[in-house]
Length: 272
Image (tube, rainbow, N blue to C red):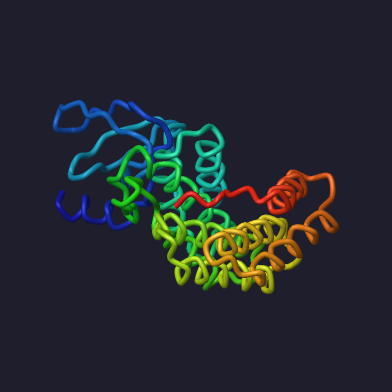
């Protein structure tokens, strides 16, 4: 009997729960409640109810409450469920499933997108739950933030993916959260400004480019208000005019017009 059970376990397939509050009655005659992201070993998937092992306990579960990661369709099913939870705003469920996806399907075509939405999920979770890996805290402004590890993987491993620019954009925003408040620190602001400049040079044709340009103009204006340097003022004016010219009739053009008006009238925006 022991050898038979060992053979079954060795031939098992990993499965992941995709719904909450699943009742599991094991061969130890105890009831358990399984939730999204819990892992099981599927030892027989030939019938309507999977034969599974959870921890050291054997039992059955309906096949529609889980994804068999070794099935031909498992990669696609798990990705769809992960994204579905994200789109519905259920970020903790999305994060659990996306982390499992990244671990089991590390050569998937969907991996850059999965990593990006894992990062987005963790950013959304950060303000409410600091128990997830990668969530840190800026005590100076009393704000939790995600450290951006999944975004760094995208930028490093998938530089030609459409998600590389999106990931780098988020990393610079995370850098800002980490270093607030600026307290007139020209050095910190200039470091971030250089990041936005490099972004615009590296990703000029992406949809994030205009957002990066807007941030660049904003920081040039902040530096002008701190230093009163005409060079920073001229740089800000040039960037805002570029946005108006290249991206007319957008919200970024509207912001640029307001910035130019406030620069012309001497209004201040820098609050730190």
